[in-house]
Image (cartoon, rainbow, N blue to C red; front, side, top):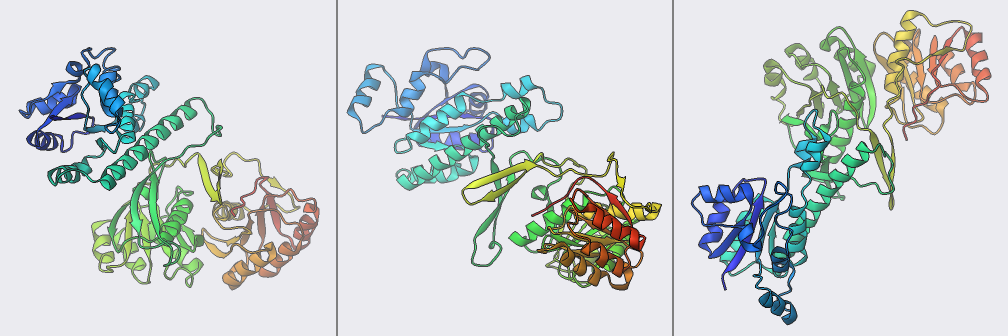
Length: 510
């Protein structure tokens, strides 16, 4: 008996060649709407789904394949005599191959200004149902959801039929595809109904690439991106030069990108092991980078640098002077590319930084669980800062504190940042006590700490950090406040003539 293939695809890539090959292999082709027209225009015989169901497409195509003549032909188990007898009694033919891909829901909701009605009309019903039915019956039905699999399917049929392993692999791909599709729809409706933390939290990611290894060479790894990326994302970067990114490269590059997005003026950020080691802002990119480099000329070696302006020749020449793993920027001038691409292993990443929005949620995995929280958007814009000390900060100290506060938000807790003159001078990250973090930052800053500011991601439970700051030459401090012993730190500041500002918000980053 002649085999039957049902083709209904929104992605027409490779469709006519696939249909022709199936026809040549003596498959009867059945199709719907635009897919049928494309096949017909290529001169390939094809039947309408309405001929099979003996029922017209109705409701603007909303109902066309939801019919026993379709799903009976898909779900009947060929090895069950009772199933095959029912098909014969009802004059239903088996369907042996299904090629379906779905309405472009992801692409639709990604359009600016898309209406809810348009989004809903692009929720496919019949497509997922056919795919799931065919995948459930993979022992008898070959199911194809991705045009990239057409060639393998044709080759398998030509060689006498697809193997059980290949059919099961194609079925697994279908269930991943429909799960991804449904997750996007669920996410869209959760946003519409303003349910940020629903009873089930479904996320879906699409593979960008396999990685050479994970954090360590004995760990395997892969990089995935969110199906609809929000805001500026490393997952959508264009790599212009250098070897393949590693797991640790991606982690560090993302950390650098998050810091540089805090700044509107020309800025440069150097990151090492996911902590900023040097940050500078200036009137131009070269000035900003020099400040970032001078903030810690030791730690920047072998690090990642993120810049928020096009890299020009002068800045590129300065960047080229030291060994860097990655340079991230919105663009590179031709002169900069000519200079930097002479380093064959230096990764150059072009990232669109105009998408300023940050994702609504931050996710963190624990064994057997997922933590979800709002993204830390805490900035000082519009915040009523409290001057807690007798001395108020100068205008310059206030500017330096704002810079320090932007940076300390991205430093692992306990976090201390020392800054002065549009640049960081020292960063103390991830210490078990705050005074220890401060001492690391002061040691790094050295004599430059005189006249600097200190930013702390959380309050001081004791005045020892203030005493260390005074000894280093700090003249102003910005911190959340809120400790039961705030007064001890205020008294220590007043004793040393240090201005201290409370933000009333903390920036823990564990």
